[in-house]
Length: 458
Image (cartoon, rainbow, N blue to C red):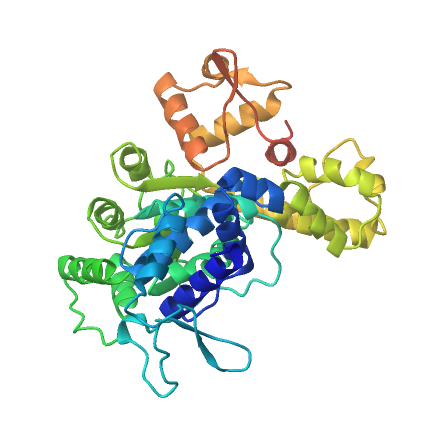
């Protein structure tokens, strides 16, 4: 049996199981596997990341395992398929060619009549996509590595609870919506809900339960609702995305402090992490959850991902705004931290006031914040506690990175208050240490630094 015959055979099995033919990368992984290539070699030869190729391979072996009734892996694929051919599989596998004729891919099998109904166990089930109030994503840039990482956690590692973190406007929701397209085949249900209107947990659970086909009577006792939802997460494989989760947290309190009336949410998140099921809850937030610090250290499938700069993919934003001086684009991107919203708003200013000339905009020594960026930062700054604001102001006065000990000496606060405030700023993704040798140094990024300086005339 040559390579093409084995790929054709696998394509028939995949189609009979899922109702879809092999995609190009799946065929590439198969051909590379048959030829004895590693995932790394396949990725390098065809221009994909190794993690993405591994994820595609994992999903492919999973589908073939379901079709054949035995575990298929990269290492045993060739041997199993040769055995399957010699034994003439009991289930008739056929593929539909362009002329709509059924062609049996196993020699010696009796062809199934087009009138015969398909095996019910092989009838593909279409995932139920319940996006509800999800925004329409019209533009998306880069993020292939980020998607591959999340695919690996959710698809291969079967994480039950994943935290997607990032500053406001960094593209968390857009990434999650794009991720759905990549990963929906793993699931029976994909459900998106935003918590932007601050629903109590009972309302959120009721809304989630209403998404399942012919749900039982939904009771309104919290424990009963949790049990009902967990039963669905065990019996079906579900991906539930909860967006805007930071609205559960109090303004003017340290990061991760739940507002009155929302104290049951951490119980919900903990139950999802600690209870056995086959599903995943993806939480999108601007602030890290306190309970994740403990859960990530336990032997539970729990992960956190912080979304950062777009990097070179941000060039597409500048190109769409028809900016000139491409040799200055990297400086502009780095100045605004590769933050897509900040770059969108700044690019609009450059187009309107500088005729699209990036070099002319960058000639000013002071970093310029347009009013829309400044307003966004102001809203976030107002949520901080007084100690957090004091630390931000002190850091804006500094011309160079400073150590924790230096901050404690300069800020008129008790050491315990400084430590708690620094930890809170880190949870809000507004401050991160830069380790040099054995010391951690702290400094505001350029955008936050400029905002605080202008606001307080530092």
